[in-house]
Length: 252
Image (tube, rainbow, N blue to C red; front, side, top):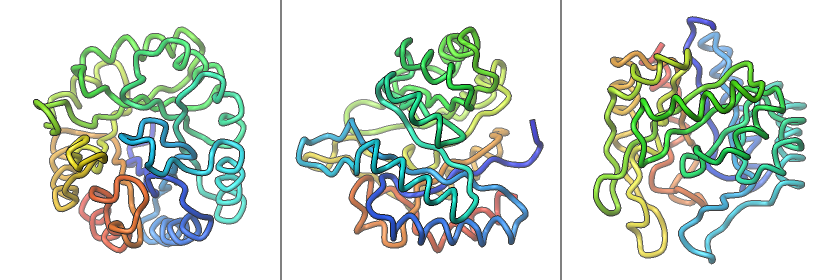
C-alpha cells in the first residue's frame, strides 16, 4: 500500500455528462498540482432515496457508459456503488473500485459478488455498526477472493435524523484493513430530516477531514458539485468544487 493519501471525489449522482466533465477537469488539474491520483466517483442509481419522487440517476447501462467516457477522456480511475449482486459483473468491467453502501454492508451475496470481480472493494461502515464489527464484512470479501478491501467511516445514527462520528473507529478498522477512508460529506448528513429528503451541513466537511487526519485515516471521500445547492441528490452536504483544492492542500 502506498503511503500517499487516497482521495475519492465526485458528484453524488450522475446528473449529466456535462457535470461529470466539469468535475473531472478539476480533478485532473488537482492531480497535476499535488502529484496525487484522485479517484472519480459518481452513482448511476441512488436506490435508497428517502422518497419515490427523488431523482435516482440514469441507471446502470447509461450510467456506466458515461463513466467509461470519463475514464477514456480524462484517464481517471473510477468508483461507483452497487446495490444488487447482479450489477457487480458489469460494473467491474468499467470501474476500478466497487463500493458497497453502508446500509448494505452485511449483505453476503453483494459482498461476494463484488469480491469475485477482482476489483478493489470499498465497504462503507453501516450507521448501526461499530468499527470492530466491520471485521466480518472484510472477511466475507477476502474469503471470496478479494485482493484488496477498503473500509470507509461515515458516522453512526445518533437518535433520529442525525449522525455522530466516533473517530476511534478509524484505528479500530485499521486492525484488519490497511486502508480506512473518511467519508467527509455523508458524515455531516441529517438523514431524512428534510421533509422527504436527507439534509446536512457542508460547513463541517473540512473539520471532519482534519479530525480524520489526526486519527490516521488513509484517505478521504468527498462528494463535490460546482453548485451544490442545485444538486439532485445530497445537495446540502456536498462540498463546493472550488473548495476541494484548499482542503486537499491541508491534508497533504
